[in-house]
Image (cartoon, rainbow, N blue to C red):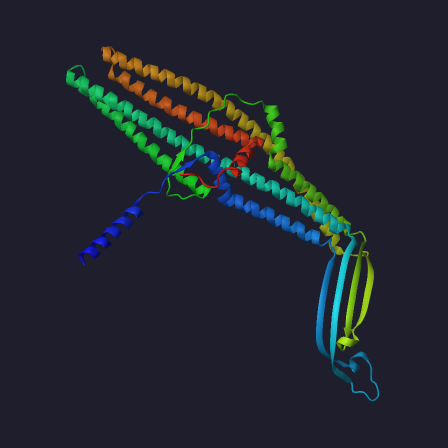
Length: 445
C-alpha cells in the first residue's frame, strides 16, 4: 500500500514538473515569420478566398457560353380529359386512360452568337486578374507588417543587450567607487552616485525586457504561432549604405506595385462591363435540339426530334439603358481609383526615399556620438582617478554614454524599417515572400 502511494506521488510530481516546464524557444528568421504569417494570417487567407470567388464567377460566365445538354427518362401512368381540349368523341368516355407511357428525352442548346455574354465573361476574367493582384497586395502588406513587428522585437532585444552591458559597466564603476572609499581616496557621495546609476541601469533593463515580451507576443500573434513560446531572433538587418535615386524607384514602383496593376485590370473589366451592357441591344443566335423516344410499351417506342435556330432581337427592354448608365458610372469610378492609386504610389516612393535619407544620416550621427561618448566617459573616469575630475562630470558622461547607445539602437532599427518601407513602396518586398514560400513551413526550435 505504501509503495502504491509513493508511486502515485512520484507520478503527480512528474506531471506537475512537466506541466510547468516552459515551451522550447523557436529560432525565427524574418523569412520564417513572413512564411508563417502568409500561411496562418487572417488577412492573407481572406485575400485568397476573394481570389477564389472571382475565379468561380469567371467559370460560371464561361459555362454560359458552352453547350448545355440534358437527358431525362420518365415512366408514368396517365389519363386524359378530352373535354379539356374541346373533344367529344361518340362512344368514348370523356376521360381516356389510364395508360402507361415510357418517355426518354434528350435536349441540347448552344450559343452561336451572344456578344453580351462574351463581354460579360471577359469582364469577369479581368476581375479575376484584379483579384489576383489584390491577393499580392495583401501578401505585400502582411510581409511589411510582419517585418515591422520583427524589427520592433529585434530592437527590444538589442536594447536588452545594451542595458545588460550598462548594468555590467555600472556594477564595475560602483565597485571602483566602493574600493576608493575604503582606501580613503573617494567619498560617500561617489558610492551613492554609483548606486543611483546602477539602479537606473537595472530599471532600464527591466523596461527593455518588458518591451521585448510585448513585441514578441504581438509578433507571435501575427504569425499564428504559440504565444507561450519564446523567440530567438537573428541578427538585426544592416542599415542601408546608399539611398537609391528617385526616378528609377518611381519606374520600378509603377511596374511592380500590385495596387496599380489591380486598378488597371479593374478599369479594363469596367470597360468590358459597359460593352456587355450595350451588347444586349444586339441580336443573339442560338441552336436548340430536342430528341424524344416515347410509346405505351417498350416494343412500340418511336424517335422524334426537333432542331431549331433561335434568333433573338431585343425590341424594348427598359433595364438595358439603366444597366448601361450603371456600368458607365462604375467605369468612371474605376478610372478615378486608378488615378488616385498612381498618386498614392508616387507619394509612398517619395516618402520612403526621404525616410531612407534621414535614416542614413541618423545612423552616421548616432555612430559618431557613441564613439564620442565612449571617449568622454573614458576621459572623465581618468580625470576622476587622477583627482582632477568631479563625480558630476563622471555622472554626466555616463548618462551621455547610455543615451548615445540608445540613440544608435533606435537609429539602426529605424533605418532597417525605412528599408522595408522603401521595398514595400517599390514592390521589391515580393522577394521576401518568394524566399518565405521556399522556406521550411515551421520554424526550428
